[in-house]
Length: 244
Image (cartoon, rainbow, N blue to C red; front, side, top):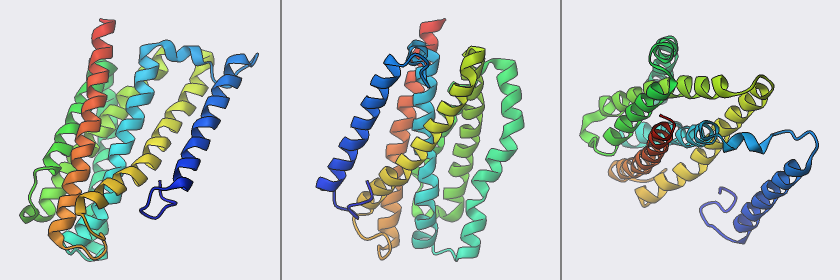
């Protein structure tokens, strides 16, 4: 996604085709191996397939906060680097403080309900960032980001618990690795795709763009993020309804 430096051409298409081909080859080998690295049959269980997919989607969304945030805070709100760093630390701080309560919520209400609640909170935060005007300043950005990161921490705790609880003892190592893979895949995808969406929404070089253009790019990026979370929420709700 980034090799073309803003232009999508034959090299990009070739790399994507190579990646897809390698993935298909891996799956073919795994189906025939006597001792496969990943037992593909376990993904027939809805809890596993849904958990991996939603983890990747939400990680993609959260990467937007790390890619778009610095451009918005520096280019639109004109914060200096020191203040910008302090502002960006608000989200991770909320996520760290939410960890222990999130675990208790999972124990009390069950992972499915908490996953849905966490996704709903993330969607609320992303939705707010599509509507907040530039005039609201730092608070208009930080408060929705704190809501998003809190919801993300709750969702991850519940989703991880659900998948590990439903995995057989000999599958837990592989499942843990798959969860890490899905998060990393989401982060890499978010860095490239959400960055591209932000640049498209700004309609100009984000380094030299006017504050209004950067704000428009930010709103566009989080509108896409809102839709991705809505998909993840819909899939999770549907899977839970099918298992009740």
